[in-house]
Image (cartoon, rainbow, N blue to C red; front, side, top):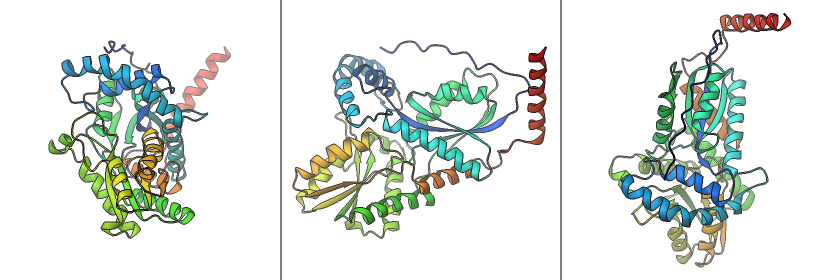
Length: 367
């Protein structure tokens, strides 16, 4: 069963500290290592989020801790090990790099803001990064999700985590949240250029499959806009690429459990395309902004095997946006739009205050 949450004191306040604006770039998360114990800790945090699993906890928790975690942790660890790099988790590496590139882009466009990244599950946690930003004097924080399409299971869960952190903070910073950018022109252009670059370098397949992460079907019936936003992204991307309806398919991957999830499912779709005579398929994952387990192992490995063993001859996985300059520019434009009205340059008063404080500290140290 989950252990009681350890109380963390509010970051120490320092009088006279200059305030500034910051950005927190949030992704889903990853285990700390490709081991059973690390994966178990990660999955326990992930699968006890009531936004992710909406089964009554009296029913779900005994099943999770008694059956699912003991059986799934080792299997998932092996999957993570197959895509782990010498520098660690691909998702963490790309998220870290995107945050640094975003800060660089904003800086080049005149915005003196600190950008940190956080994981909803795993490390670095949203709590720890918000603590760090507050300790550094951030009085205005923009929360940017790495999820282009809004879902209660992802975007809203980030809001929950920030709200939970807020409960122990006396002097809250101003907070803004970006909910979605599934139809942002820059994001769609970046996706299209990524696909076009792959086609230019490797030739063009007979069919393009756009695979998005799945969610339970009931979320659509309850009003979650995720399904509709995935379809809009797919339509916009297809239009940008000049594709007709018969030239591409949208599907949903990563189904978990026996409940009905959004359809069509990715693996059966790949098998069906092969049996229908599609010789080469190209697969892109527009909902993932950085390569991770779900793209590198589930699609590039398992999806490839499903297609080839069903009669297909050639399978091409198209990498995620990762550190693509067009994507970083799009992300920067999105952040810049939502920073509107907030001061993003240090004011002369703030600079003078910081200078006075530094001089006072220096004088005290010399005595």
